Image 1 (cartoon, helix red, strand yellow):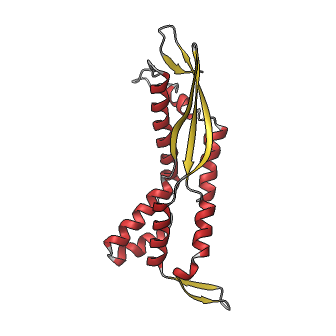
Image 2 (cartoon, rainbow, N blue to C red; image 1 turned 180 degrees about the vertical axis):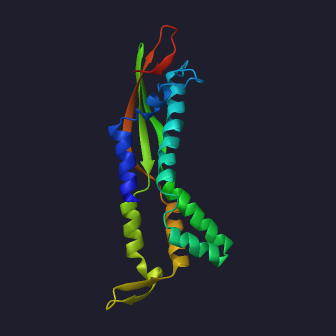
Image 3 (cartoon, helix red, strand yellow; image 1 turned 90 degrees about the horizontal axis):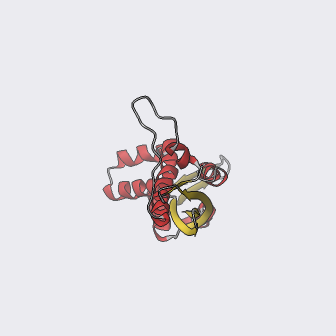
Length: 191
């Protein structure tokens, strides 16, 4: 999951979030027309782009990983415990769709503008440390000779769920998109 997170953050930061303008300016098919969205206000443009960037980030996570642990999915299905199933589904969602993109700053200077976006997500190192520090709450047996550890999956899920539910997301990255006004005084992404 950490590798996936790094890939997505790298995509957002190094790509300078230019995936959205690329989509807006992509070559249309024969049945489509090409149109770049225009905005009366840079603030409205910023808000729309934040929503789109968040959806793109979370879509990428969902497409790369359908579940954080398919083996636990199978266990949960057999268990028939609605409360635990809901906690597991929520944990999957919180980790797979964890990115929040918000408008951090809008800079408008005449016919040019830029929007700085803030990307938030969970601190997975802190989550892993928390789970490691609390193994006594879910590890039931350790066989050092075989290198095996047995865990109570129900307790592990509840511990992870409670942590995610009660922990604030951290700032992961910022990224900037430049905008310009056209001849009709409307804002659009600068090419």
